[in-house]
Image (cartoon, rainbow, N blue to C red):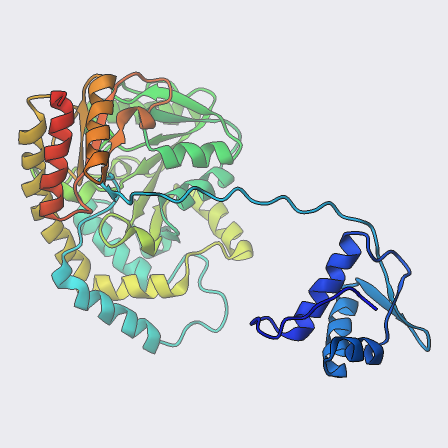
Length: 442
């Protein structure tokens, strides 16, 4: 008989337990190729189970090709090569402390607007989904709503058919890189870490470029990834002369400028800066996202690519169905149609406009502001030692703040990148107190 024990107290069905036990006997070498298994009647009697339990287990093993049957002869092991014991995974250490993160990417969402969010998803549940795969460009009604919004808020005049919906900005970048010819990708340094990782994963080399220096040469580059409305993470707006120089370099090299317009709506000193793509659609790919205005977890964005690139992307997506989930698209359509997004952006802008000066008042005696106050975070330049001390003090108080060096590759600035969107006012005050304590050297 087989050295097998079944446990009726386990949630796993008895046939599944028996099949797993036989697999283990094969992989550890107890059973070898050609060995005959007991008959279903004999094994059932030995284990004290119904014969159907053994028959179901044998049927499963037969379907998986672990055993074979011979008419009138019985059931035999089909493959008995001994397999090494699987390595035990290294389990991550349990975190003793869960920190409240002051990151640059979490927005503030007015809790008074949660009813509108729930209403959008109720409408999704009551809407009949498409019978097959969605439109490869994305939900047509949502593209119409986004075209209206881009014209109204970003000065970018595009038709619905020029918009491709994506699963966020990094997904848009990944798809773009797949549609471009060979070449490296220039990226601002310091810059957006997720973009750098996406470019490297695509098999392309990253060309570091000082974030505050104009781009005048893109020879050998297929693309340049920039954040002109609010440079991430230093916060500067790209000057008009630098914008024109970048576009000229792109035209000369036949490269595409990837404009990540990640939080352009959250200016509170002046009106939002117009999109770079409004100057030249022929060589700029515009990337937007709902992560900063709606929710990072929605994983939804949009891409307006140069016409030739757009056609290549659309043809590819028609084959791969590389589009964001239909329910997320349908929910965003409702949020836009009902004015929910406009309300959330307006209230968030007011909150950021209040919090940014409070952060500045607390940190200015000890650090230098890297760029103008705008958006949901600010970056502060200070010595590596002071930045490390501030981070340690924040962690001791239960907060996590990122060091500027995490955004650098070859660049040298050091300091703190302090987000103030994803916390309450009370949490922000406690975090600032801890950070200032670290900067003072207490």
